[in-house]
Length: 358
Image (cartoon, rainbow, N blue to C red; front, side, top):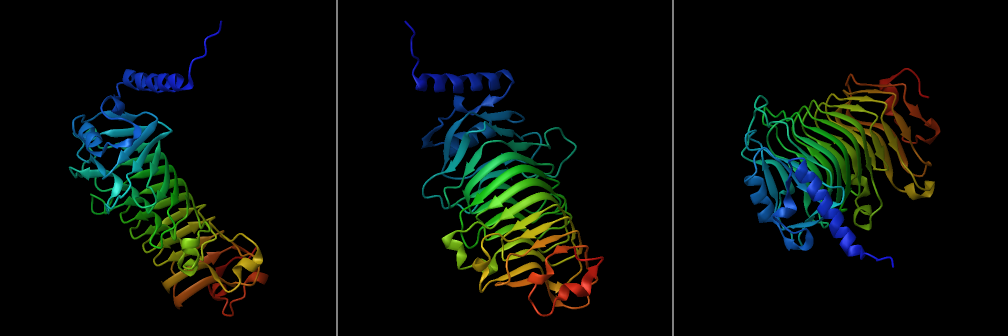
């Protein structure tokens, strides 16, 4: 007679097998110290694991780990740790979360500016950050060469925050394959970069009033796609929504602002290549709204090549380029625009046009 093994036993066996495999690789398996039952507050216990296992990879098997306060990793290379989460390992903010810091603070303790000592190049990889609609996700507080990869964030106020860098405001961090869904708050930001010299690639951001905000310079963005997702909490503030709010001097390749009121706010001397600003939905959904490809609070000094600006219908006030002050030496080269849908009278973009409108 064939014996049927209960599903719960198979699940537990599978989790144990993953943990055993991680242990064989030399990882510290966090479930040897804390439960992943989605009920117990494990913030202090996880912090103790971090503090007592310097220069180790700490592995989180599938499960839900409740955090009532942030956990922080050391930036000092001799104390640093590498956090790796299984694909369905969830770090979840506890009910009643009120902390102003992110749930995970990389380099949040033992600050350091050191690229020469082994241990300086550490990462957070994999898993899910659940902000429970109130908390911030991940911050990089200190150190250099920090990596964040293959992470999914849900219900966060701020997804990723790269603070002022340890080396003269340089962080040298590398971010890739991170997806962020915000909480729809009016002060929500997908990615906030205060420092310089970071590379961010292959990211999708939704449910935020501001997709990407940069106050630092020398950052490279590649294939970042902030999407303004309809949420009742944000619709009254649609005119304030911005895909990329750039207050520095930065570089963009193939970045895509999707349905924000303004695609790019460019306050400095930035470089954009093959980027997209687009609006979706029925044409009548734009009635009474303003849709702007690029807005400059000062003069236009950026270099923009091969940009696609896709207006939908002419019921909105469709503006390619809105410039606060004349005299800038920026240019818009070979853009792709349906000029029949551009209905703001000044058509300022033609002053800065190089090549042809396609």
